[in-house]
Image 1 (cartoon, rainbow, N blue to C red):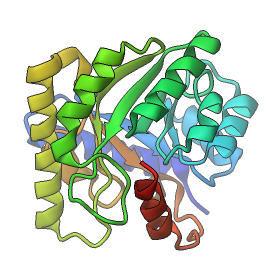
Image 2: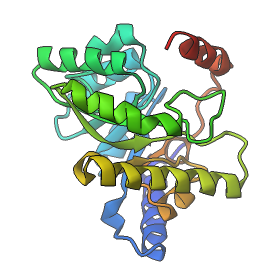
Image 3: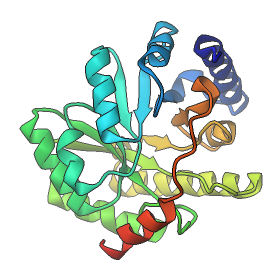
Image 4: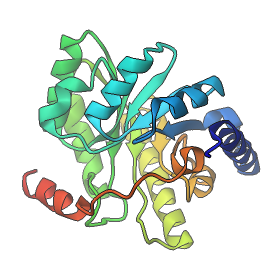
Length: 248
């Protein structure tokens, strides 16, 4: 039996210790409980233990949970790849989107946010290691993308920072270098475009969130260390990523 409450306590203690060792305030790092494929009972146990931020990877599954739980004090983050034909489902249900990587997606989200009278906080997904299996903007294209995004003056969405997903088989040293690179990219964007637009760095998961915090993460996405392992999905990430890049 997975003890969500106990797992959360351990993760929070480790998060606080890691932040303090890095000379940071514990409150400068937000813990996102990744609740994909988890039952409502497990999420409610986490809520009872004080967890308020949850991350979902699938639009429909996430909306069903948001609706069924119906707790306005919770903050819901969409952290999966978002297809443009599903943008209308995100604003009004989710508070954050961590995976913005195209202007077309940004324009659609803006229109849908206005239609739902909501504001969606967005992070730019960066493929910091140029991993062919990952979505996201190449680091060299981020500044140009931000410039075009800001010139578009899209109401309804609010740029807040950057996000990356670590390479699956990276060594600890490679993972640290990736996180350092994202932090430096975020700092550069903050200098160019304004610190208020780049206050957040979403990076680090169950296996590497301590390294991510040391390198400047303000949000860490932890699932299995809280809820236990999920069933392994079909191995389709590579083919989807290739298809996505071919149509950008």
